[in-house]
Image (tube, rainbow, N blue to C red; front, side, top):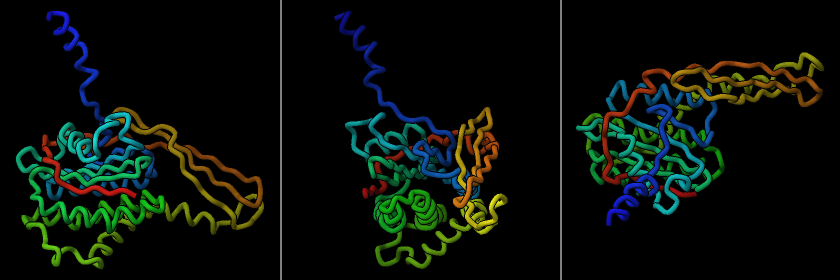
Length: 273
């Protein structure tokens, strides 16, 4: 019996559930689905939501859940992760998690235990309306941006104001969701448009309007060190190529502070494409 007890003690870490760590309490993009500018815009948006309403809203992208919970359902994995991180206020349990698994072609909106089950229906509509259409075409950045804005407009803000989940007839009309999504796109688009407009500039080598610009993250920032990247400008009509380095600011203290100790009871909605 003594040896059995020792074996069980030593084996416990092997059986323990493993979860990924978060880089920020807003966005942790382990699947590299977002550019630096898109991450920064999402971080600012979700940090502002927390500041204005107290609601903690986290987005996590992974290529697959297999390294963490290969035999577990998506729903159980998302609930366990939510509770492991402690998303949301410990008293109100009003946290929100959006989990995207790009190679598994699956995602979930996980809601804190403070949300009544009627919000599950609203979550499913948001998944189907704003996340999945873009994910089905491989446009993860737009799907995440549009979906997050829809979650904020349809779930986070009404809940923070004390509203009950709307009935099926009273949910957010599509045109209102579009307005909210458009605001997010304008925030995210600033650097993207700057890079896009490069194609209208003349190549300094051959004079043609055939330039393109690509940004590449070389080292991600952490809470203690800056990250780095390169922006490469090329001409498709000649051999012109210009590479310039840039730094990425350290994760801010407001983004890297901890969660509030909230929990989930398994509410939310899932989607697959």
